Length: 66
Image (tube, rainbow, N blue to C red):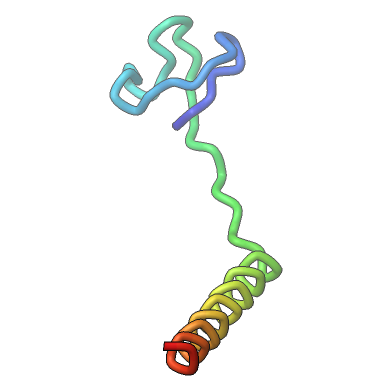
């Protein structure tokens, strides 16, 4: 969603009038999307691996104590 600096608010895509803010008429551009950092990808992968390992441990514990 584009941001209007003049109005200090977000403008929905459906509210844009020919690419401009409907309130003040300022031309708005889509904000640049930043790529996802490698650290975040590593954190997500490590979390998934950890949760899978804890699930395996839980299943093993249940099989020994059931």
